[in-house]
Image (tube, rainbow, N blue to C red; front, side, top):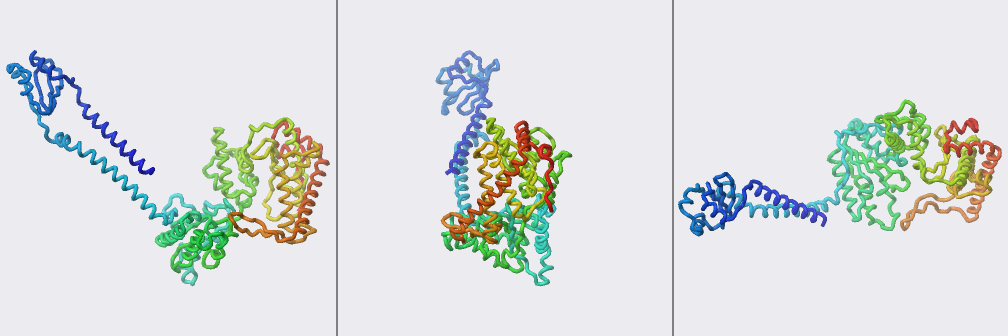
Length: 610
């Protein structure tokens, strides 16, 4: 319907334009005055006419004084009849030079044909557009089952290689074998080795799975077919399977090549877990992928690379040998990797001399490659908004806080009472973190609202950690509860500002018992089956594998951990009350304290014993 309306509007507009052009040209050369036959008769009687040119239904009159006129007559009338009808003096008429022009050549044919040709052409153009729209709709219907994969050829300008992928050293080493297979398959076939069918990239969102897949294609200099798992699934059963067949058909024509399926869990989930049974569209698509990977010719040099951050939900048939039998894990980057990734992303960004990428890497634990790219982009935007030509370290640090906690909300004005409560709350967090030997050092304290938080205390580890002890977790819970404890100690009651802290502290205490086996009373075992189940569209994240009696003990143990941590936080706040008051005074005056300013009040943090 939209296409029909569009074509009609085009047709109507074209018609108006052509009519306007013809009307312009038809009147463009007419500058003579149009007069009646009676005026011409009077001028002839007065012997004012010098020449008359007769052309069809018009008479172009030139007066002796030089003026020109146009006289309209009936098509069937001749000048002789006009002379006879008006009884003009033959002598006066004889003194006038009379010429007769007949329509001939181009003008004649245009005049004769155009009235019929123009409507015919316009109708023909209109019918053509209508038929093309119908054919387009039919062709789209016929293409419904074709693959929508984006192909990147060998000569693609923005080719990515392993040089552009910082970090993930082990993953790149693993994938170098795949590159060699694509470049020189004969070397392996001579030894009886077959080309690997599939490589599964596993990693958290933003760790660079797609970038790494493109780098493999760039290194091997082969075509790269890229699409998402969700692009297979449609409302019609069989479309996804048809697209899989079409994708592999195209890939075989371009072999050697790489097929990259992002978010394969969209079609690769365990079969039989939903209510659709074996006729479900997603399962049909998965079955076709399995068949195509099994049906590879041994000499067909095609490698399927898939990416997911949910390997736990994939169908076991996908992971068996001969399909996705190679699994490459992409971990979150450590300190050295983050610095290397930052060096890649700052190539086209002008930085001030004070910027130390190592300091930035130290402040961004847990950031993935995508997070770091976004961080530098935010810093560049911030510098541009301030009309500066270079990016400063302050821009980057502000962007870190923006990415982690959201933008500052300076418009959220607190009353003096709420501001004071927030200052004690954040000072409590900072104080307990500073005087807990295993807690991360405080980098910044602020009572300016940011994101959902009314204030925040930023503390970051000095080095990347992969294992944590029970004592570290207890101290972490104590830091989380410090704001709550400080409010209760100073004001005698607590506010809703501690809600998020209490929720996080309770969740961490539960993990200590149910996941990490750190409860002395319940012993070294886990509680709760965390395997995902899907039923009626709901995800059940945990099934109980323990009794109600154990559930009561878990609740008691959670309370014990919370009480132990709260007692520790209370002891530090009471013992360091003078530091707490000084920190609050500075916070109320400046609203934000950096690490150096905070340590001027409380001294340097004691290093934990190795």
